[in-house]
Image (cartoon, rainbow, N blue to C red):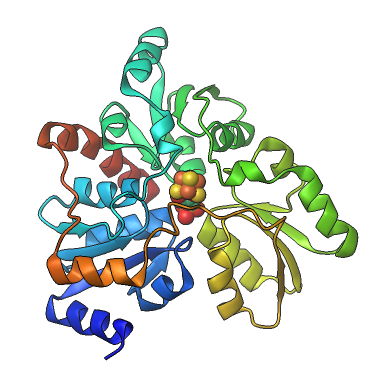
Length: 301
Ligand code: 13P
Ligand code: SF4
């Protein structure tokens, strides 16, 4: 039996659910029950009846699933797959910042640790942040850790005052405006579709800004043929599958998230076989962090 056949067999035997983010390797996306963006995967993990979930993504995603469903076993196949941006926010500095802005709502990108979520009012993802923030009455917002998503949000709602944490995604930061200009010189009609984790100068050159699944939907629905995709290259797998006749260009060959690419088929097989790499969270932190994720799901509904 091949490795893939063994994974499918084990998955059935153990009644497990395999989730994969769009940044995962193509072969991982192919064996997953569901592939999606951060919000979609968080919803599926919460609502699915399976008690065993193999979360092919990075730690904050598996942690969020565990926070919402402590009774489920959540396995992270590559235990060292973290998110450098999530690690840019520290609790002590956040507590200080909250003291300086006692009336601000504290909003964290889901790309943050359980400890940071425990100090926040609500979590958001790139696909639901505008909707959620527009529903909130507070005019002052502490937003962390991504200054790029934060500044994008502040442009969408000029009536609110944003206090931005200086974090950023090292993968999206690799692109600069000249990379996009180089493609546009050859393909002037190509639409530029970017993730809000990109720097402001890159967002300014974009025709559409959205989460991974929103970028895929946009390109799929469009009548046009050429697109510059400014996010991690894993999304190209789904884009090409759904749109075999369209052309997708990437700015440079640099947009790879090494952490997202850590998960291999061997890791998935191993953790399903041995039920190792289970995510555990201190109960006191989990209860506090739960509030921000429950609020996200309620606001985003
Ligand atoms: P989305 O899939 O929600 O767009 O998130 C992108 C990301 O950086 C996940 O780490
Ligand atoms: Fe973190 Fe960026 Fe990788 Fe997403 S793409 S997991 S934000 S480093």
